[in-house]
Length: 423
Image 1: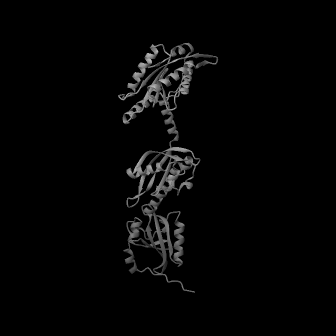
Image 2: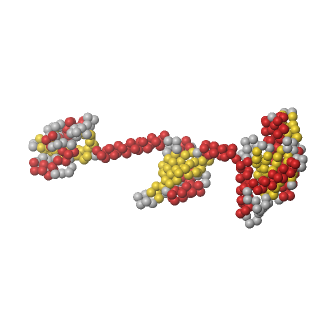
Image 3: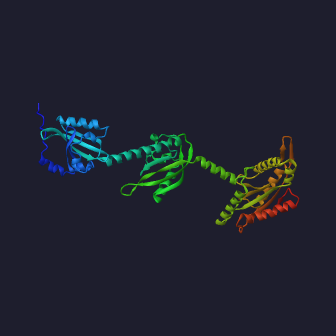
């Protein structure tokens, strides 16, 4: 059995060089401070060593840590060896809380069993770690409660983090997505490539449009705001940002666009949209070396005002819808059909020469004349339509040029007795 190691003595000569150490050193005998070096005086914010000597360690130990401090002192005094480093909280002479890492060992002090302790001030580090913990907790709390989806990918496009909100949006849990390529959730990988290219070029994007496929296969519209990540050498290291589901907003925008471009009664293009389409076609004709044929038919129901005056506007609306259905049954599938207003309609015929346009107009006129238009459950009436035809000329620059000739032709049809095609 080996004999216990001798306990070193604390001699005056030793105190001189210990006092010069940068690390705080204290000697405790019977729970009271017997010696402190200059670094310990500074650590405990004392005016001098005399302000500390003779005081109990319990004057400085945090109440919740005092029992651990005393237990380690007793263990060292009993000669049980060096106590390993441990973190304790103490108060300095001004009442400020400090976090120290202490190591202690038995020492002989003038023939008495004492404890020599060295300290390392970890107050700032402990505060920093606490701030980091709080920051991490705040981050996780935000990630757990936010409705938008925060994500991060590496330089290869692999998802390294995604917040729990992704479950509500895509139907996948975060664990199912992390480790997979972000492009895997795009219906068209080229859309993801366009996003990455924009980020690489500008460093960030704001409200970048895109689409993703949910777990159930449904495609949703998203808006992405994200920025590039750089490594310590400034090299591209991935992206992080937020995307949100904007499917409802997109659906509303599409509906508003439909309402703006479609006539609410008949479902045809409204005046603005059908004239835009005509202008676009005239523009395309100017850009082509060879111009294809283009004609328009201007259709106007004869004596329509009498229907509204006699049977009411509800009956008039019903007649207009039936008239549109009749024209649909006679027109070609590629023809663009729109309502200019009231009982006046425009049919744009691409690839139709003057003869073909007139033939189609005559077919529509005959179909309308042969149709019984129902205005009530047991009541119907007969209607006719006057049609003005005009063929596009090379010098036409805008829709008004073509419509002016069609309007003159319609006037001639009306003046000629209605229910006819002109020219």
